[in-house]
Image 1 (cartoon, rainbow, N blue to C red):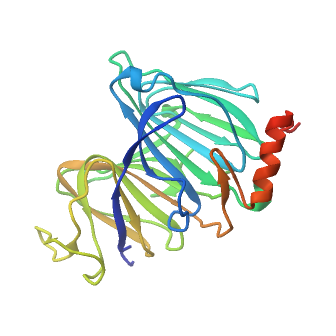
Image 2: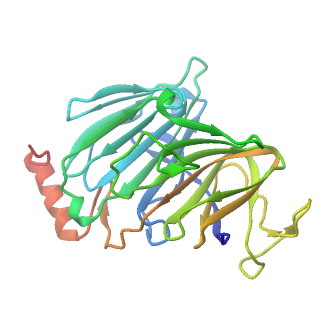
Image 3: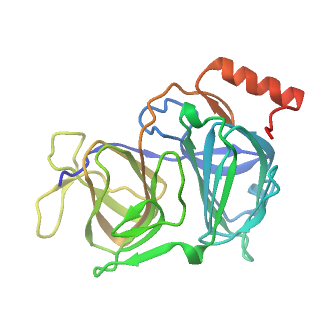
Length: 301
């Protein structure tokens, strides 16, 4: 097994999206090389209803898949395919926009006004950009949850992990999407595919992700305990960790434990041309999409 080195650690930045939803963006609308096949990752977490209730009114998508994972509160969804639903705590919505879909997402919060969820955009290869749209709504009770002997808990949303497979399938990037909790002080090795782009996003507690050696990046401390691995800065809430190649990610949880998403997918390695929620391979394809929106021919039979 080879430990994946940490390539970079960044903090998600505050921004607004939709009709004025306050959120934090870890990456998006920039160079996609480091995160291919993933395009954008948002953390929408807020306890002030006026900062999220305007939501994401009707808007189009083409050429991508969007993954919404709700931790607290509710999100109402409706789309041009006739799908309607309400995402609650622990639920997942996986939408393949394909050739084109128009939808809206309206965060509603819980009785205390709290709202927390994530949205990830995954690219589609050129061969599937114009595929038929598809919608998957997965309830929390259908998501596999595994508890290891040391107290580590993993929810398997998609992909295979520790012999269990998540309920979301048929996704072009064939991603692994895990919600991981590691208890305080526990050192945990998590297997990943060596050839996939991989990132972790911490949203509770803190932890350190470590190297096989000390020859990359600035190392600030040594671990306490029974090993002598070098570690990076303690990474906490809203930290995005991008990894280099290797077939395992190693984390040691901080004093309050650490909870993070661990996401990986096969790079598509194709040109990316996008305009907001429409992502194609060329500017000409974007212009076609814009023209079809104006002419009312964007949605395909």
